[in-house]
Image (tube, rainbow, N blue to C red):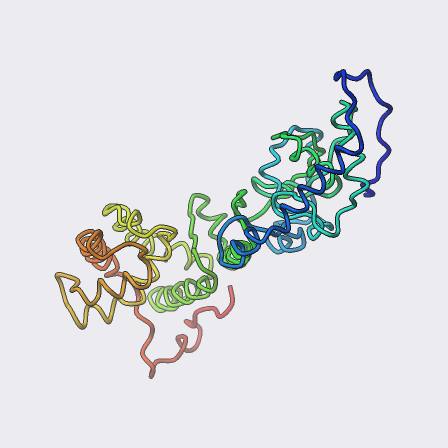
Length: 346
């Protein structure tokens, strides 16, 4: 859609003093200077807020269950939940400050119209999870925010997604969400266990969870002497392997010592190091060297503040991990021969 829709005729003004085009031009200049400020750029370069980039709608397509949306009609939506754009994500930053691609004349006209209390048409958005992507109306969002508005009228088309999206999502977080969506596509855990939530704080780890599930699937095939589907193995893995470790993690309240990390992060660490820790330390666990390794990988706090709680958490989690299936020995076939072989795909 073309954002250059005709403005409605001026209604009876509500202000005694007119809002001049010069005031709009000055406001636009201030906003553009703010969007290009050195401090904002340096903060973004060093991984601090503010996040400068709007997300492109194309980046979320792999998260969607279906490209078809449900028309929700006109709604009043929070501007803070608008995180991206369908086509003009390079024209504004995440705060909807205008960048070089924005149309200054269009912006100024809209600012004058808004301050003269003329009615502007609703914007048009896609809703994905709890966030919105602008199909038409980026300049109106920018002007509304510059004038202190927190909500805006919008025609909403909702598109279902396999994973939740929240307003704090950024480009790196979107990569993790894409990997999560692929993991759910293969395992079906979001359908078989709707309450299950497996979230990582860094990308690249869902493939490791799939390996754990494949190991579980292999041994289930041996035990049952029949093919086991990947979704079936995923449910068994979650109930008998993953859940006990997570419950141990929750029982010790250990996550408060690891800001920014998740239960699934810590599960993976425990599962990865289980055999080595048992072989080297036995029970009770662990010693200071193990704590330091855990601290280097996860904690952002000083050792003195969490040593005792880490000791309890890792011991409990390792005890709970006793049922974690070990990978098959090197001299064993990757799957049982003949009709008892486990499925390769799923």
